[in-house]
Length: 435
Image (cartoon, rainbow, N blue to C red; front, side, top):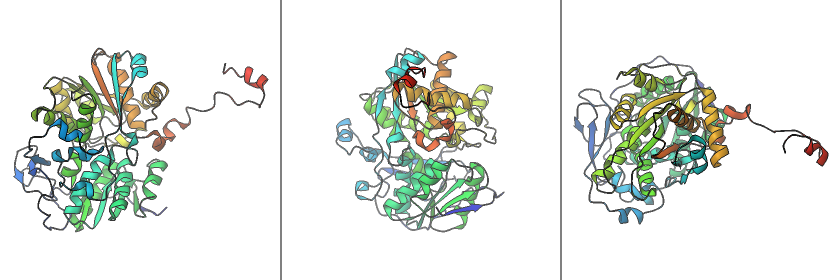
């Protein structure tokens, strides 16, 4: 494994840099996208490698002029995220480009877990079956398309693990150089899962926010570097919408009454909500109320703290939790998570590390799904929402499992193991207490 260690840097975050070469993309490179619009002031800019509004420095997101899209057209598409290409910032011929073809993962009826928690109608959207075993393959596929159109020479990211895995794999598939940056204390399996795809894994002494600041500085200084969650973030973030599209389609083209989503940067939660709203606008699902709930680990819960305090400002924290994939102390979309959860009648809740472990075991032993710590957080929060009366147990509920438990074995390794160690005889077995 080729891993470089970089000392923590105290550098300011670049607000407006592009970090990619200013070459014109081909016509139709971004499908039905019409530009980038500021989420704060509404100012619009042309499609390009930009992520901050030049007027107010607010975040930019992709704006569209959608054509009429039918359920039948979508259902006739490939069994991956490109069945929704008309709703994404990607070219019409996206299916012909080398990519990992993520998405259309299973939606499982969780009757056993539902009975355990007292929920009448529970589903698990299991994204652990994506190519690198997390939902990050979705967002990276959209980011890779944008990086390709901008003629980027390096495909890169700061990451808490899953994103690094997805970027390294997607870059290898597409034949573009990848450089991925991670906190040096990241779980070993996630480090290995990146290093097998790239020889440029860079470990930074610091937490994710330190890694992100470094990536932002590099993006502003180096031409031709596409950082998926920095200078091509608007395109990257759109990939999370496909989770919302799939859930609605797999439920028979309807929205769930309630959905619980883990919160790191907060982008996934806000984009699933955006997907639901787009489906309503396009007439693909019935316009009906739904509640969105956010899940955080107590050791890194700035959004949950703000929600409970009834304030809009997110106060950054220093992460201290086993749920490292959610350990973003200064979440970029935190304020928008608050908006979504409050406006839909949902909530943001957090659970301790012990409750995260309990959540992992609850899902594994009731539904046969081994989730990582982010999923354990989601299940733990689901349980807490039921116990505190914040979630209606009579309504159809979906939770999202974002990754595979094999990536975070250390979280539970010391808490599970053999029920007994015996000699190879029936007498030893009979006296073991197992039966």
